[in-house]
Figure 1 (cartoon, rainbow, N blue to C red):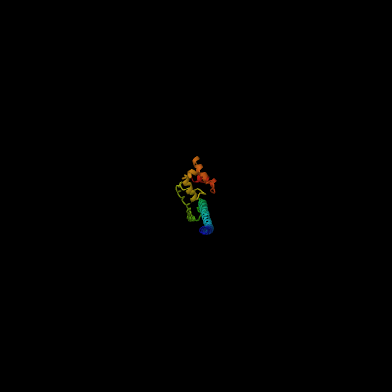
Figure 2 (cartoon, rainbow, N blue to C red):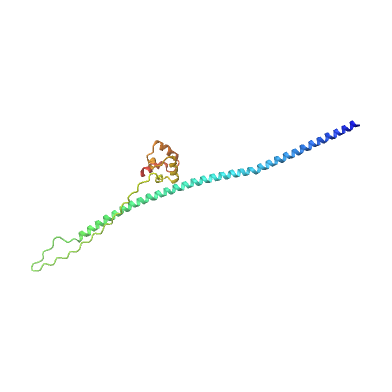
Length: 221
């Protein structure tokens, strides 16, 4: 009887242990599933955020680069416009000087012609006999020679600052700064570059008007 009771107890213990293991496995499975779902949810949230941050960084870098390029292009256009205006002003000054000289020559010519017409004749006609000689005609005062207009005095040219690379047509402030950083610090290095200077200048071959830099620099130096 005792042996049979013990067998029943053993059976019950085994059954309880089995049920306990089964329940533990189910609980462990549920926990693992919950952890997996949590990881998936976390990835689903983090991935769009990472992607959004990456896109923001790319847009920011792209816009900064575009802004920098646009800024340099506008500066170069402004410098080119400034150079063109100065060139035109120089031509206008030369034309004005030529006009003044031409006007002066015409005034002198007209003054000489007027003086020649107003001068008295050298020989007077003899007075008839028995009559008193008529009084000589009063001399008309010679016309005053109009004062010739003086041409404007030429301005004394200021010495060229050859360290100012922006004086070369096509080189803007931004390009000039990069050239100085590369070792091109004088206009003479652009006008008559050495072999080493040529290597340094090749780095700026993509700049608009690069092929004319040497010719424009020679005009200044």
